[in-house]
Length: 107
Length: 114
Image (cartoon, rainbow over all chains, first blue to last red; front, side):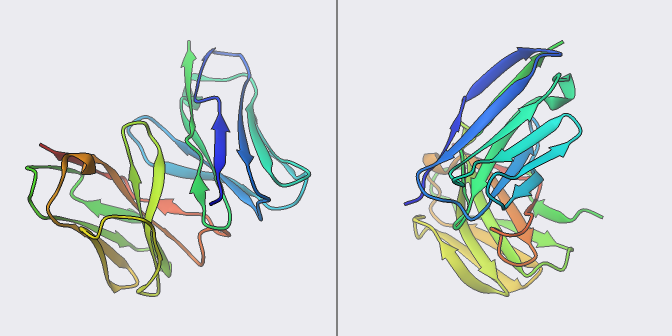
């Protein structure tokens, strides 16, 4: 079945550094969604990408969908301690979630 | 005002027992889901209901049985609990199929089987 791989599994950064997580699929995705889960919390929707090559920004967060619609990335510029959490991608059609990237930020 | 609520928040029980987790959403959504998140944070869909009808039934032991009395509720009943059932269970809902629409997750139920 469809596999959505996410890397890295863990990322530890110093506050102010940038962070990127990547999501790769073995098959073409119709769309992709990104979620954030704070420690002890529940997943919260961040964004959905649909078009090939699409780029969307939310303040310090930049989301990209690859031209072939098989990969996506989330980039955070100048991380803050509030960015701590696990970031998940989820791909269509049966919405399999990636394993997530756990981000920790050292003040 | 909670959009998606689950009860209980914590559930500690012995192996072999039967337990239920309740979920309610007040968003007017027509699709609801159950997810299991294990200790490694892997989030796996278990069931999906649309307008009270089962859509997705992943490879889940038949000890797990979802029940949707109406569009706003999706409960999860688990028979003969096993150690491996220990996890956080999340309920979620969306308006329309999840692949195209934002999912709203409940706060989770942490199940511990002793």
